[in-house]
Length: 159
Image 1: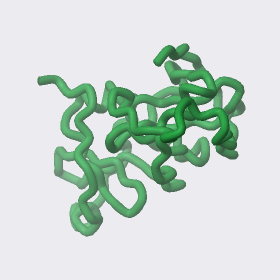
Image 2: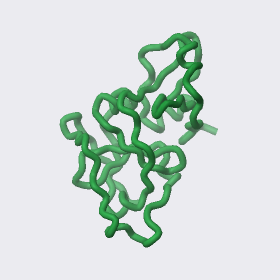
Image 3: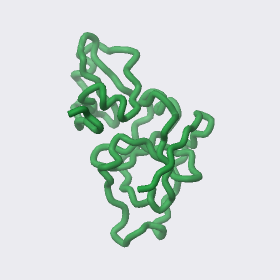
């Protein structure tokens, strides 16, 4: 995929996801997951809607600037894709409004909490690779423990 890295501001954010034109898809089989993009933030040229690619290469819409700021450190280096490239990536469930990175008090583990699950972030290099924001508040471990476990996020992990 050919992408251009762009920087955005909160004021550029569009809370309406772009309409996907089924006739513009590159093949009759439709969009497919793109695991090579896991951990990237993407947008389509001409749209202010931002997606996070994860969980096996699915683009998942980030619904609002507050959620974006909860999850990510900056608005820089968002990959901007042409419409046909963007449409070729399978769409997953939107990120939950209010999703965040969370950690239990006195625990080292960090989780992306979205869609009713805590998703384990394996190490600091993954936080950097995904541009995740380190949790500024910790929560009682009982609250973190109560959330069902989701997937492991290890994109860009140091081996």
